Length: 117
Length: 111
Image (cartoon, rainbow over all chains, first blue to last red; front, side, top):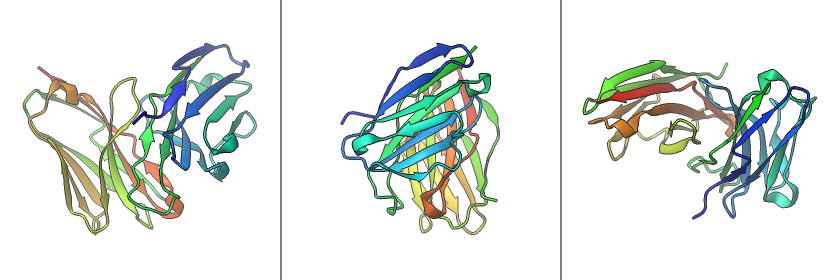
């Protein structure tokens, strides 16, 4: 079974530039998550999709971050303009459930490493 | 406030030794608790998932325990190997299917 695919793996940009990350979840997974993980910390949820609808985006800095999941499959996360504090790993994850099954495992991608200079 | 706290923050052990990582949570309502292993530069990989009624669950040399009364969980690693060097993250699923992540314990296994 193919895992969660993310690209690019690494990106270095200057502050105030824009960047976009792409995620392809495991086939058939209804739930897709974007997390931000700063070095030495646990992941922080940015946004959760259920199919192509947003379930939770309460911690997404909407003035500069946006995400979409058109057609309920692939997703993109965009940052514009980037700040130094956005340097982090952006993890995409997916799970099969409809959000109501307590035991569903969440599968993570390898992450997209962003450095803002 | 829903929180997950892990201890120790970091740990160094010798190859072949056992160790135990701790996770305390104040998440309500509680759905399940997960332990993830995150190798440097990689995404987290699930080790165990435990629901309210489960006290112990094993996955090879990893054994997780859960005490829902005291809201504590532990992850015991037996006969550690160099490949066990990683961050171990405790994640609690609460209401509205929200996941609350701990900061992780960084384990280094030395030869």
